[in-house]
Image 1: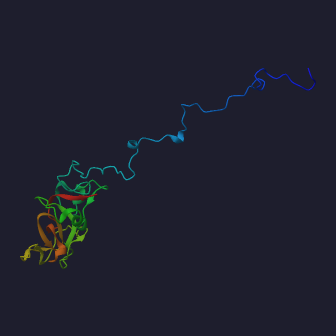
Image 2 (image 1 turned 135 degrees about the vertical axis):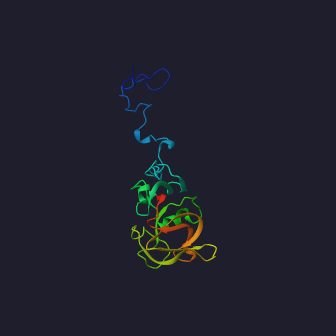
Image 3 (image 1 turned 120 degrees about the vertical axis):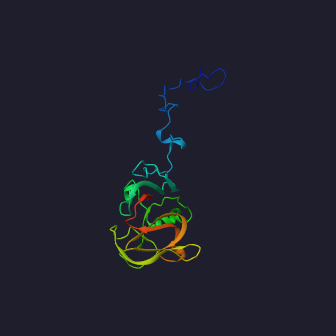
Length: 208
């Protein structure tokens, strides 16, 4: 054999060399998914703007006798309340005696509450002064007192004065007909009743 030559394989290819033993690659199991890739089903995620329903509106019985605006303004029965005690018909503090402006905003101009009338926190005469369009809050006193008689209610149809009152404090409640109260102007028109603050009614309008 000539010096400096190697035996070539019969087929002329490279000699078969053994492969080195390589450690297996560190790969994650195929059936495992990273936690970050997991997404909760859409129907299990609460909407960001969802709100729980308000608590019962009425202190007595819980169920309103009339609804102006669901979850916002309802009538709660409570026999024997004057304007100063009417708030006790509402499930306080979540609900409160509706003010005159709340009544206007939440249905009092378009929805007529059937008789009997119930109280609101609104006033058209306080302390024997001049009558005025309904203001928010109960009148200054529920003690019985009188002053000069003045007109406190007009027809919404413009047919003149409906009622004169001599009560020193005249508050407002609900009515099943439209009236202008405290002032004969269109902005004072709604389904109002009027009466001295000592008048005993059967409930209240409660707002949330």
